[in-house]
Length: 46
Image (cartoon, rainbow, N blue to C red; front, top):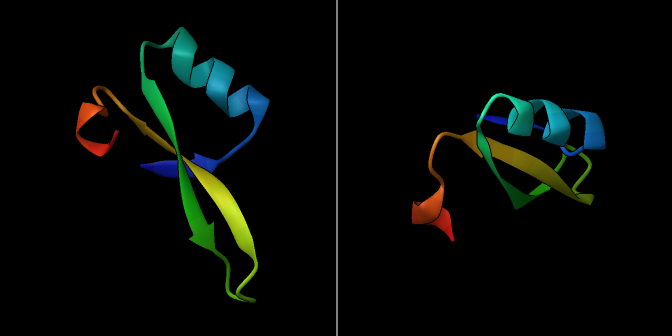
């Protein structure tokens, strides 16, 4: 799943044993931003 790239979300994911990875995205106004990919094992996307 993806979620907002904030320190609070990163810490919450780590507290519960999830792996995180940054993902480049664009919003509806075509502005560049990063989302946070969260999962049990994200080795496949590194």
